[in-house]
Structures are given as structure tokens and as C-alpha cells.
Length: 342
Ligand code: SAH
Image (tube, rainbow, N blue to C red; front, side):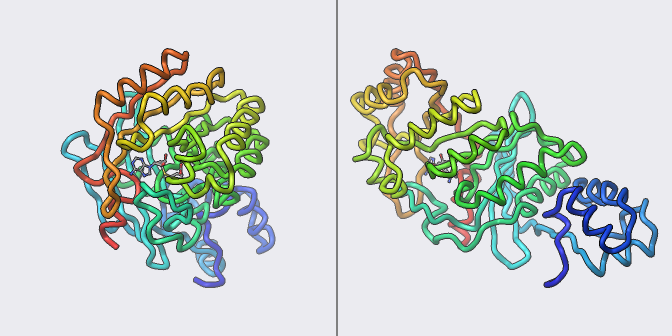
């Protein structure tokens, strides 16, 4: 496969260009793209192409494929967790969640992560490599095919830091949004970042009305430096400033994710400090009782503390939700399963 081109990574226009170079009619590109979007992995299944054309395509192209190594279904809420094996043998995780308004897929953007957040299960083993846009797209396509459902929403909150794989993530967003393909609207896609400021500013200029989630997790530099090394590069002030620019340019509401860790970031003072920092912004806060991670001794804040925290933020007019835990029996939270397998 080495010098063949993976069709999963290509837009209709790109396929068109390559076909024309090989003397194939332009209009074939759309047909091929549609087969690929529907999850066909074998050229011989592309029944509207002649045998001769299929053979010709096989010489130049291949269709990347994820192998489903594990599929776990939560008995509590039906959440499904997948371990997919990539062509080079690396493994990643994806999750399918079912809400009232439809299916949401949570996908990975890298094999591992190099951000080093102390409470996160994905980061321990470092980052092996970036995922290609096709590998991100294929998580959606493969899940749809396995379950025979249509995924309406995507969150890039699985393993990896999407803003550390910027170009491939942007390309993925364009592919998945493509009218001829899966046609998932930008407004139905969230990208979560630990706060890579230059990339947030760049994203603000892409003209993609996606939802940006910021993994904030702390009200000040002292706490954030301790639990998220990225903060030593981009301080909270710089991050919040970038968020304000993002909001100004995109008019989109930002979500601040805040993992509640007992005794670390969950006091009333922490809540007030956070409120003062983000007051007046077009944003909302999502409190997440931190998930246990093997080898990390952070514990979940108790329910009372979380409620108090929420109450303080709301007193300052900041809309605040507490995340419902899904799939806790199948290690559905990011990186947990891959970590336990490795
Ligand atoms: N790298 C990106 C996206 C992946 S993590 C980011 O940092 O946003 C997805 C979300 O899960 C982030 O908000 C992350 O901080 C959070 N998270 C990681 N480990 C967690 C844990 N043990 N408990 C709760 N949330 C966690």
C-alpha cells in the first residue's frame, strides 16, 4: 500500500484532480466519494463503476480500514465503546452515545497525547502519532455501519489534543461536513482543547461555526500549572483572552469544561475566582466529576461541593451544568480502556 493513496483522506475535488491526471472522467470522483462515505472498503462493491475502472483504481488507490478490536456496550445506558486498530497496529478509542436528540460520536484525534494533564488517562504513554483526517472520518463511518444508525453529532474529545493535530482536524471537519458525504453540520460538532492559544486564534478565522470546548479545570495559574502543564506555556489570562477573541469572531458560545477534583479545585473560593474570570462571556460551564484513573490519586468531589460550586457560578449569571456520567461500567471515559489494554 505504501505508494498508493488512501481515498479516505480525500475530498471530492482532490479525487477529481487525481482521476483527471489518470485520464478518468471527472464525474466519477463523486461516485467514488459517496461509496467511501457509505463505508464501502472494496472497489468491487462500487457497482456503478466498470470492472476496468475498478481495476485501474486499485492500482493507484486503496481504502483505509479500521479493524474493530473490541466493542463494549454499557448495560446502564447503552453507550458503546470501541477499540479500533489502525493499519499500523496502533489502537484508538471511540464512543457512541445515545441522547434524546440522536446519536453522538466521540472520536480520537491522536494515538496518545503529549499534553501531560495529570488527571487524564490518555497521556501517560505519550503521543505515538497524529491521526490522518481519513482515520478520524473512518471512526464515524465505521460506527454508523456497525450499528446501522446515523450519527448526528460529533465531539472530538477522545484520545489526543485536536489542536496539536490542527491541519488534519480541519481537513476532517471539512470532509465530514461535505454535502456529498456525511453532511454533518458544523453546529453539530464540538472540538475540545486543553488550550493551545495560537491554534484557537487560527480556528477563529476558519469560518467554521463549530462549538469550542475549553478544558479549563482551574480558576488560576497556580492550580492550572499543577494539573495541566500546557498552562506554563499559555497562562489562563492568555487563554481567556483567546477565547474572547474566538467568541467575538465566531459569535459562538464557548463551553468551559471543569473536572471537579476533591480538594484541588473545588472550593467555594475557586468557584468565585472562576466566576470573576469568565463573567460576562458568551459561555457556559460544564462541571464533570473527575473520573478515577489508575495510578492517579485524584478523587471526585462529593455531590454537595459540586452543587455549591454550581450555585456560586449561577449566582454570577454563568450558566452551569453538571455532566451526566455515561458508560461508567465500560470505561467509556477518554483513554481509560486503551490504557488498561496497554
Ligand atoms: N485534549 C483535548 C480533548 C481530549 S480530553 C482536551 O484537553 O480538551 C476530553 C475531556 O476530558 C477534556 O475536557 C479533559 O480534560 C477531560 N478529562 C480527561 N481526563 C479526565 C478525567 N480523569 N476525568 C474527567 N475528565 C477528564
